[in-house]
Image (cartoon, rainbow, N blue to C red; front, side, top):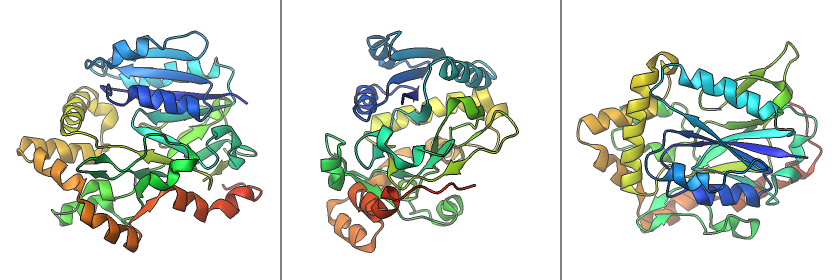
Length: 302
């Protein structure tokens, strides 16, 4: 079995090498990095990994109208030419966490075309993200995740000024068999069939995604500035999307972005209460809870 990773990159100089190392650690055979006009040194970093064998690079310019439609076509063409059985779609701040440490050992790969993988935010404390240096199974108990689901996170944030976006649960990301992909949803939260045959879909119980949205204040501000520029150029294709980014742009315009970042930082004395309430759990706990299902024969889900 061969697996490709379609890795989105935009000014992630602090994370990109950690992301690449983790993908290789979990068994990804080919990385296709699509760099969206990075200007912070990320472009130069990934160039040193370029290889016809296992690291391809696709350059994008978000200032070009309809660039993401062009990206979708180009990415799909690359994936389908790559001789791989599965493709995962992720950004550089998303770390895929398989139960066994190997993506290829995920029990749900058999009998399905698309896996929708649950994604959880990693809390950030005053000393940095609550995650171990090495994301291997032996350290999953040190990887903390916000797991409390809010029915309508957008309404919750609008109604409660003290609420914090990071404490919600993110949308799933997907992995899929390349030959079954017709189109990819913006953000890679879903894929659609290349033909009239329904896709066999499932939510794996032995795999999750740890999302690292916040690391430093400067990175957060840079990401908000980047998304502002992207939305200005791609508004037609992004209409109705990226509401949380639009919220942060509005906060930046009001001079409140520093306050928003400060609200995301988790004080050490709050962690025990959040752990006790179940709002924060470790990756080990989440995966162990589903271990029995993960080792059972997977069932197809429409």
